[in-house]
Every structure is written in C-alpha cells, then in structure tokens.
Length: 99
Image (cartoon, rainbow, N blue to C red; front, side):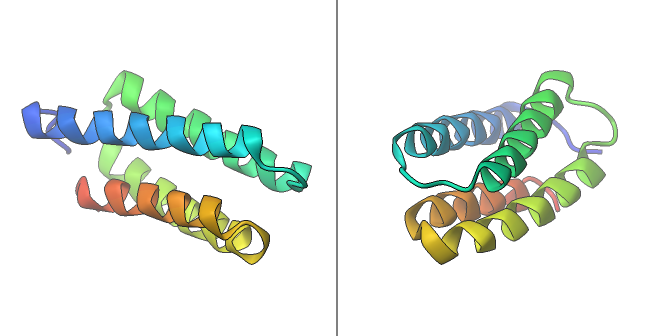
C-alpha cells in the first residue's frame, strides 16, 4: 500500500502538473493521430481517478499506469518527441511513487 503522506502529496502535485503540461502540449500539437491521443486521454483519466481515490491498490495501479505511460511515450516519440519525453517524465514520477 502506498502512503499518501506529505511527500506523497508533493509527488501527486508533480503528477498533476505533468498531466496539465502534457495536455497543454497536446492541445497545441498539430497532426496528432486521434487513436494515439485517445490512448493518452485514457491514461490521463486513469491517473486522475487513482489520485482522487488514493485506494489500497495504488501500488499495482501505479505499476500498470507506469507501463502504459512508457508504451504510449514510445509511440509519441516517433513523430512528437517532445510530447513523448513529457509522458516519459510522467512515467518516472509514477515509478518513484513505489513501483
């Protein structure tokens, strides 16, 4: 189980900030594949839901989301390396939370 103490709250804020940063870049990036953009939206939704509930399955949820983020980042890096790099940074934050 992940403890959402003060340090965890700081990490949660980092995740929120990174999600917002990625969304800003996605909004201003031309030529995004709609399916890839949808994949990222689902990841974003799942992460935000996990942050809202802070459930007992957070460690396994984080592991899945970290894996998903890395997979999606690799896809973005082909045509949109900056966005891919931001998603990879998000995965690093998820991993640092206990995965």
